[in-house]
Image: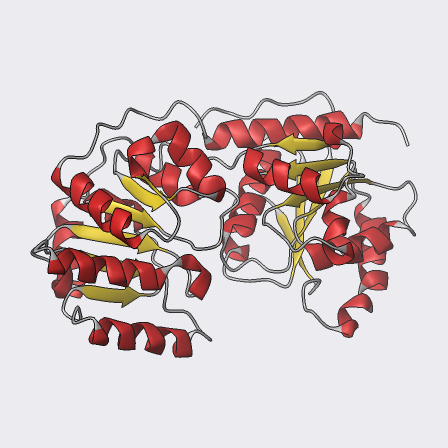
Length: 377
């Protein structure tokens, strides 16, 4: 990965996020923290902790445990604690990545002098209204796609377009190298763990266990392909999570009803997603709610693996630019199975990615920090 340029002025940047378990906002926080450290800045993340804290600290950032994301009146009682922390840390910039931490941060900053600059990132299509509007109060408001920029500007007419910056998320192309193939040892171990996935082209759908991600559509796709005489296997990767047991049981019942029990496997999140993508004949992105970006799309395409997804939101934006053959109208079950069959038969060639690199995202964000830090008042 290209090195991060060392700036003339070193900064202290505090990122506010509910927790560091998993998800796009969490990954972005880690990636920016890493870039800050590489550039010589001081990087601090304040959250309720989580499994990614160890990595954050190993990469040179500081972590302070403070729960700013619990939707409870007690969270407002932490404004004073955060204010005291900010007075001690003396940050140049406070960067909020979620609504409730942003509100707590906003109020805490009122008692800090000199007042740090306030930057926000909108990661999702939050419901318009006063609660969500806090993420539009940053001196600079980062959005992760043009689709999301259009959304916030259409719902908040008072928002000055010049404060909104599109900084797409990016991937480390060294972590997802073009044409990668898993080695024999991994291949053998994977099919020993999941023998049901052997013997037919593999479809992989990486998505957490929530109805919005379109797992039902993926299961119906396998059943529809089977009726056409096309045998495939499906891995619902990341669907098994604590607290999602009822949803998993619902999916298992649908699998049984559709007669594809021997073809579909559900799994928790895994760290070997690169090898799983590389093994896959198709990577699916079937969220029925528009995504703001769609990192899955660029991870798979970076590895030279075809992606099949609904043409809406950030996923549709990426597919239109990078892999038009993988676009299907939202909810069009007939077109979905037709396009899957076409791609399984002959997928159009995929060129190496020349955009959406992690280093691009990091450099753009650090440049924004530098710009904001030079503003007066």
